Image 1 (tube, rainbow, N blue to C red):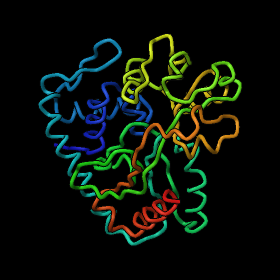
Image 2 (spheres, rainbow, N blue to C red):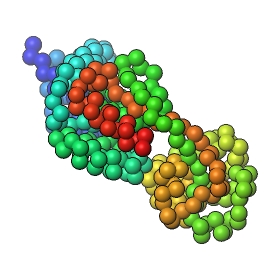
Image 3 (cartoon, one colour):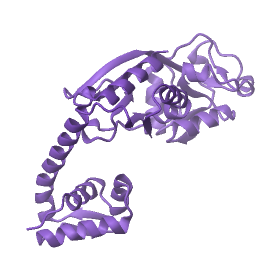
Image 4 (tube, rainbow, N blue to C red):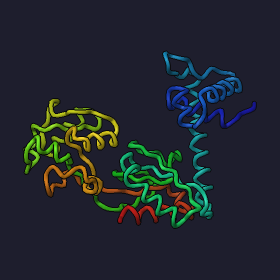
Length: 290
């Protein structure tokens, strides 16, 4: 029986994503190309792997059974890739860094410039995502995170403690009047990242009880939230080193660091032995600490 790993990988990612279009985006392929690879695997194995339900795909009984075996193959392929890259002593090449959306936009450009100035042979690929990238699946080589991972295969380094607080434009603060404590903000409008309920729950943990009437805008993007804050639509919550550097806004309550959070730098244990990964890891740690 002929067997092509590319076809198996197409099946694996399609099963994980639930649709050909989503899987094609993950693999960087066109949807027709991915569909042909899945169809080719079905012909090679002589089974039907998916059935279409609406716009999505569901696994057949045979597909669900074979998926577990293909997952094992995927993990093995990932380990081979990690081990091979870990042995690389070449400086020239690509290093993929996963970082939150707002950091990718407002913090990483300067850091990438510094890395490129020192090591022009290294190409930096930035994955801007608020999701936690799976380093074991090679979704990134290095991740900047606000939570410490627990997997034993990962190496972590705590860079520093950070803080975040409320910001708004001077014009908006004139409308709501002076505030000395967060209890003074119960009549203000806030820009929520994520659901209203999750935002209200988070604020309640800091002693601020809000209602739906306090939420002026709801969005999923931290960058959209920040731009709307700078436009005066309400109060936003961002890291203090980002907010303090923006001239169009000011702290809502002077001297208040509402939230404390750590910055962790993470890579896979296998990749730490790669000269290129280790170099970027150390340069990134130095820049973030500064």
